[in-house]
Amino acid sequence: MSHAASLAHHRQPSWIGGRTALRIAAKELGIHLDTVLSTPRGAPAVAQSLIASISHKRRIAIALVAPVDLINRDPSDQLCTNTIGVDIEELDKPRPKIARLVLRPDEASIVDSLPQEHRWRAIATMFSTKESVFKAIDPHLQRYVGFAEASIRVIDNHNTSVQLHLSKESADTEGQFALDGWWDTIDNHVITSVRCRRRRLITQDLPAPLPAQSPCRREAP
Image 1 (cartoon, rainbow, N blue to C red):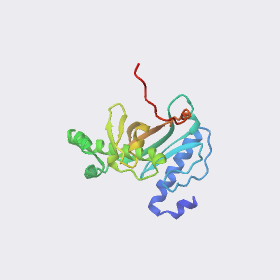
Image 2 (spheres, rainbow, N blue to C red):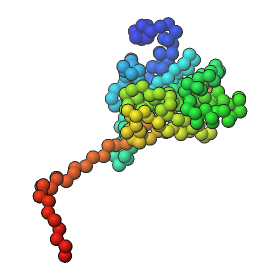
Image 3 (cartoon, rainbow, N blue to C red):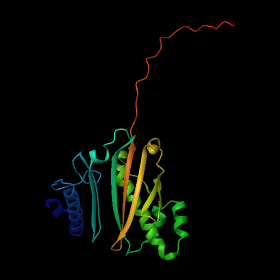
Image 4 (tube, rainbow, N blue to C red):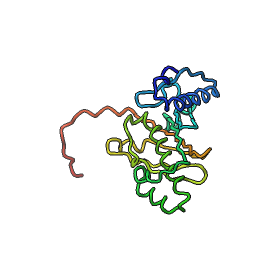
């Protein structure tokens, strides 16, 4: 708690709440966590044997945690190196103007086609899902990812479809990621989570090159 005391007063309750949620989640798996600080990139600093994500607002906090070997255990699966992200956004304080900052044109068109009373929840869900995406892929990319680099489609059965549009510096890795999204609402908040699976880089030994030969002309039969 000494770190929490160093934070601004208004940040202390939510910071403590997020870490408390993480310890409770870990305890459900039989894992004991001491004080969890943050990595230089803002993620919870847990042991390399764990993956974790935290989000918190004024009244609610949530955390996801799992042992790495629990979700990366299938050696035959070419999708491995799972990471996760979770996010919470408030629904009782509509901010529809953020749409122009966080949505791609195709996403904005979907929102505009909705009845007025459903638009803010759609915006908040897309925004929150992008935040979860960024948390999930950050361990792989290790850079800031812009809102235009992911597009979200909200599905009614609490799932979300995620498509990446990574910038040129990461475009060659775009096909390596498979992302699964989920969303729900509780207590005037939307909660989203994303699992990111990165494909294994498959390598194989190449045959030794043949010795160089002087060119020769094939004779006609």
